[in-house]
Each structure stands twice: as structure tokens, then as C-alpha cells.
Length: 239
Image 1 (cartoon, rainbow, N blue to C red):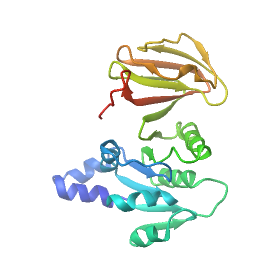
Image 2: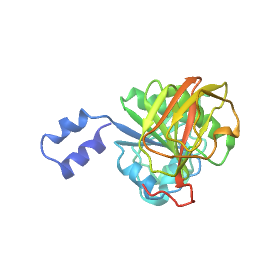
Image 3: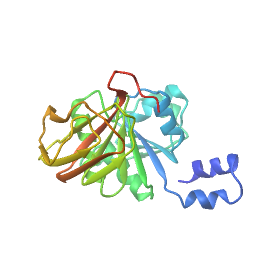
């Protein structure tokens, strides 16, 4: 598990580095089989990860960008034969249990390895049912581990109670409930909510940050927060 961490230690750090790193939170990046745009933002996420793992066909996304994962796991029905050959030296675990998606299988595996943070890449786009299924993973695991989704348009989190974060003034964000309803109170947004009941509707789409920090308080089933990589005037956000 720690080969990537020790490699960094040998390259960059002093003899005390390994103990320090092994006592810090471990971040795992999971590559799924959805839309995958390899830009600077995604590259930084991958480079900062302690582990890079692929959910089955997610490995197809890495072949052309010269990144080798630590693990490929799934029922292996969507990974291409050429991809398996390309990553012939990578550990592959075939898990054919039909009671869970490949994303669920690999998240459970990473939890068993003791990671502290999960970033899902390639988890949106293509099939809408797969996108919704991957969004549901945030609700399923948010009590167990820090987990979010990053795609080409946004960072996606699930909020169950409250959150406060710094943000650029004018940044777009959206709030959406999928299933049930939640009462929201916000501070720092252009269109504030004061104990407003949010249903599965477009009501919370395309709000803007008016001042920072932004605070969102939630009562009920929870809400998805989409931090868009775009300002209110359409200017892209570079992070």
C-alpha cells in the first residue's frame, strides 16, 4: 500500500520523513469509467494522491496519459484487453459480486486499506444512471470518510449538517436535494436561504458567492453542493 509514499520520501525528504508521512491522512484517487478530462486540475489531484486506483474500465482513462495505477479492481467487464496488457505489472483484483457496482467495491477496498480521503474522478458523464449512482456514493459513505467527486465542471460534496468554506467572490455554486427534502440556511450567497425547504427541483441551481466564508446549514436528508469551476461572468476558475 505504501510504495508510492515511500517513493516520495526517498526522492524528496529526510530520514524522518517516512514516519511523518505515515502519520498523516492518506488520500486515494479513484478513477471511474465516466467522462475523464485530463487537465491541470485533475493532474494535481492525481499527483497529490497517496494511492491511485481504478474501478474496472476506469483504467482505460489512464493509458494515454502515462499514469500507472496502484490497483485495478472490479468485475473486469469494461476494461479493454489492450488496457490489461498495458498495465500487466499492476495488481488486478477481479471481484464479480453483482450486489454492488465497481465503484462500491473499490471504495470498500480502500476503506479496508485505511485511507482517510477519497476523490472520485471520471464519475460523471456518459450514462446518467451511472452518474446518479456515483452521486449516491457520497450519501452512502460521507459518515465514514471524507469523499467527493471532481469532474471537468465542478467539485461535488454531500452536506448532512453544516459546512463553512472560503471562496472567490462571484464563484458559481449549486445546491440540490436528490430524494426527500431538506431545510437550508445559507450565509455568503447572492440569493440567501433562510430555513428554506429544498426539494428535488432546479430551485438551488446557479447561485453565486457574495462574500466569504460561505456557510451552509442543513436539516433533513442532506444536500449536494456543486462548487462550479466558473465565475458569474463565465470566467473559468483555475485552481
